[in-house]
Image (cartoon, rainbow, N blue to C red; front, top):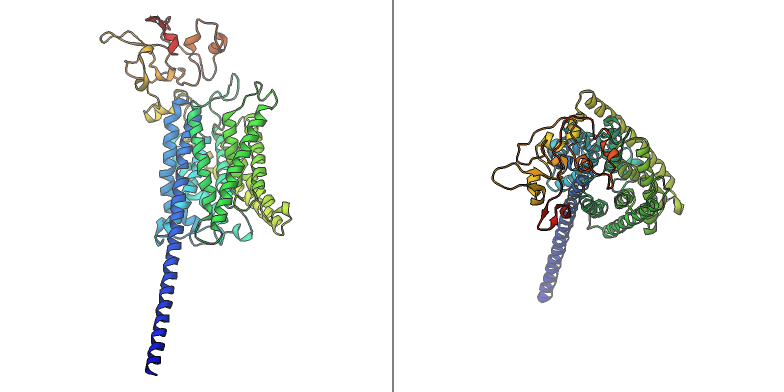
Length: 537
């Protein structure tokens, strides 16, 4: 009997120890799950943060060389200004305790738990994208002070309120069935409408529209291409990471579906734009070119459109959504030109057009959408439409007030003189491509002692007024064409051959105003060991 009692006591003790071990294991597993989700948010946030580098390269290549430094500093300040604004007021307005319209707690992260900071970082990189989009659409003529103002307002107030409506449990759109998984409306439509209002009130770049106007091309397709590829990569994290966790049942499947749909939509949109442009009317594309830049923007539009429903669509739905997004981009791109609205980055077509279509497409093609005769699909379409109108109205009204005030105070746009000279040198004192960094011997005539070396055929914005590289730099008169993206009129003064005719180059317009500056004469190429200088050009 005693032995039996001892055995029973030992069994009970072992069972108790096993229960304790299981409880500890479950508790530790719960901690592990939580840590994995926090780590997931941080890593995804870092990948999305890298999109800022993509935007910087894309925008730098899409502007003229004389404005490259200006657009780069604006891209980095999107992060710096946006970070402070979102920390002080933006995150509390978006995700703080509040009412159905706005949050109002947690200012400057006071009272925020350490683990919650991962969510703060994840949401901040989304907010930074909004301001970056607008900076590109207003490039090459926007005042620096105005940029500082609208960047802070967008990330600190305008975007966070929309975010609270759509992505919190108490937001008035979220509680009625609005569906926007990764931000077709919240992020991209907000940015696209702000960009449109900014472009209209700011006005086009000099020479873009009107008499003797011409398209203004960016100075580097390779930079634009590299930036575009980074953005295509970043969208995979942007959309897939919007699941917000990776340790729960169904998380992995949702992330996988979102990533594949995003890729497929970008592919179909890019191909559609490529083909449409190639076989379009001769009035639009007379030489029937295969356009890289339009194809890239079309692919980005497809990914923007998939943000709303990328986790809840069949793959063929992503293909159809992307293809239609490509058509929408192409139509808006040409409408903007017809309406004389100057958007150097096509931000309105990519983000505005893609965002609107994305909110409609999710109600059509999700697994229980209108195409599948789902029960709540029409409800989603209704509230996505209401949300779309609310975002457009909210953003438009605030941006009209903000940009109009900046214009009234004379802060919105730089002067014509500064715009012609270029913002890099005048506003920042830092040329993106300084002559001394790349000048080679074939551009210089004479090398003896301290004699003045004359420049041959250097781009005008890299020359001093007299054409000599060892003279101190000086600002030139408003009439002097300080840019690189147009041909140097000196080169063809005495020649009738070549792509550009003399009459076209010598006709005064916004880029070549009448002025009294005398250019350094171009001399005949010298023979150096039997090799003409022309071989270097």
